[in-house]
Image: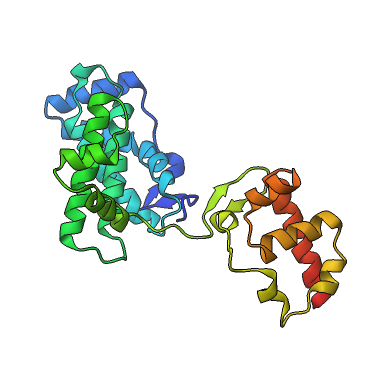
Length: 258
């Protein structure tokens, strides 16, 4: 999802205005008096908030323009329902509204077909969970959610799994210092043992040119199917070091085999 472009839905994101808290309060007063122009001004002054929220969904394949528009709907709902007497910052109230609107949109547009009844159970479970969190300031268990909506726990789990957005194996789980670790790096493959690799592909010569540490990393990762975390624990180095050494070793082997 391209969030780094300047124009989204015809809006130049580099020129979006910023409102102070006093300006927001003044606009809310004018809105309460029926000033439609003040509402438009408040919407425009909070579009940066929408942009910051939709960045949380950067791993989604959804078009940034579409998600921005959905986020704006959440923003407008927040403006129309905000109660100034509660003495809460508008952004504190608006962010969950925008997130909720985006999540509903992504669930409803999921490419995986989910039955209406299963989707309804999932929505009830989500709303129940959010309500319990607000009332008790803690995350409820699946058992508590199931009891609240009067459904079996197994059905609730199945429904929530059905509407979950699938993750790509290439989604990053760690990014720091240029050493990106992806989901696929965390998945072990216990069936991918050495005997399945070396029968038809001659890698021994290429591996023999590696350092002892690189050799052990390649053996553990690809012949024994261990994750980078498991390899790091076994040879007592960091996962980031395992990632760098693995990439370097594979590059050396590829150059030798070509």
